[in-house]
Image 1 (tube, rainbow, N blue to C red):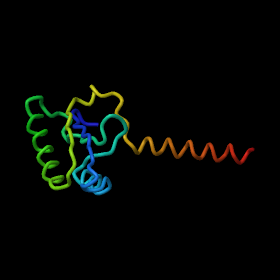
Image 2: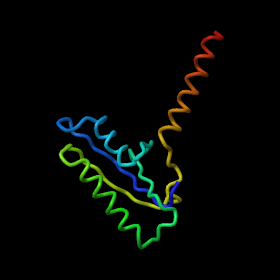
Image 3: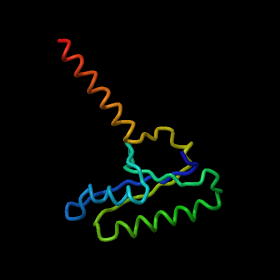
Length: 113
């Protein structure tokens, strides 16, 4: 994982774009879905990004997000930190794998009964 990440929380509006459309747009920008208080995370590509350069990187991704979601009638917040400051970052792929494993275990237990 990169040194800095930007997390995004999205609020949907029933008269706006559907969650699946918004999610597709965020995935196209390089965001990944996560579990927790935030919905998506963007990993800034350079592990050695200097503290003085992170501001430009944040503006760049914020502008791209703003442009991409314009007209979709959604609200969002951005939150950028060093990766080490956020120890509980759990990608949805990991959660999906764990859930599938649990489902298989339950199916096996049901077969035994």
